[in-house]
Image 1 (cartoon, one colour):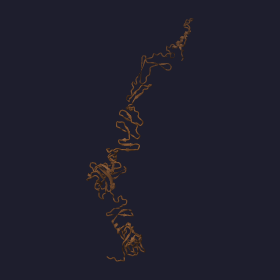
Image 2 (cartoon, one colour):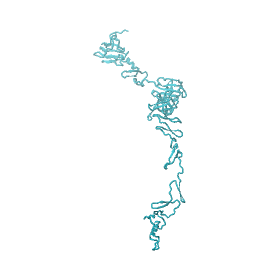
Image 3 (tube, helix red, strand yellow):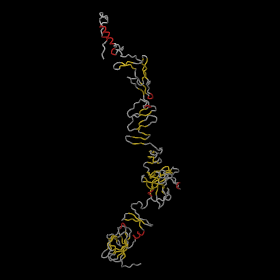
Length: 509
């Protein structure tokens, strides 16, 4: 687009406006007026932008403004954003805030401060309800926040190994003491105060300063175990069990799937002393799981004996009664098993007593002895020790009598006297019969009788035979004379000839 010349730079002509020759406007002035005409819009009546106009012939409405569009001007009102309103009036434009009409920190406790470079800065203390502390205290390293009732405060930094201890409504403190229980994290150890007044509860542990015992609350909260002073067994009740009055418990089987034994109150006629387990320490219904005391003290039970028709006193020994199946203070008599289950500590009624459990099982000869082995026992059997077997065994009376007297035994060669041989006849021909006698020290008082059927001497293999007339021990037992007889008796050292009867003498009565 052609650029109009600057009107201020067109110099007016220096000639007369009317040409005297033509009587018309002179050419110079015509050209100058035409330039003004063109500059002013060339007859459009609209002064162009390039000539300092608007290029518009529209009368603006209220609030319209000339807004450049890149090539000229457009008429338009102001646009509005959120929270802003525009009111166009006659010759006026009014802008107003229709969004945020006021500003407050609400319940946060924060309030607006003076705006800085257009930014709104909040100041104050953030309330607890909005995630704050309602306080301005700065915690030190290792401090822990606590409530004051209106705000949060901070503890001091704690000592290494200490724990935070409540002071009720006061400020918590760092401590190594829990109401008398001292925790030392550097050594370490625990000190416990006296818990003699502690109430029993399952899973609770306390120290009883009055007895010096550690206690554990067990079972369903009805068992107090004194640590190191009691032994309990866990099992399944094969019959209902009542812990008071005193009740003896015996083994009835096992539950392999559960890994426990089964037990029940003792019954009449038990014969196996090893079946007694202990004493009931809690009441159990049929098929309930629970515990019995194998060793230690059961408290809070009835121990006066009234339930069993007896009167018990402190320190009474109590036994299993195989006749009734109940406890008794009367020691059973053979052939019943004898099992002492313990003794009364405090004889009391109404669950006020206590009982010390200590099973003492009466022994059964041959039951658990390693040097006794019985076969089938018969009436009047005797007990005899066998050096060859190495243990005591039962024998018939006849076998003992026969061993001391026995039937005569005839020998036709050198021989060793057997344990059961006492009458011995020599019938060896051709030479002396040599006899190995029993060791005298093992057979003190044993009697051996020899008789000769041959005219051959009978001699001991060792010099352990003292002659009838006394003197040093030699070997001669019988002379080489048929029909001679002699009696030897052991004195624990040698065999003494106490009688010698030749065949060729006359015995007179």
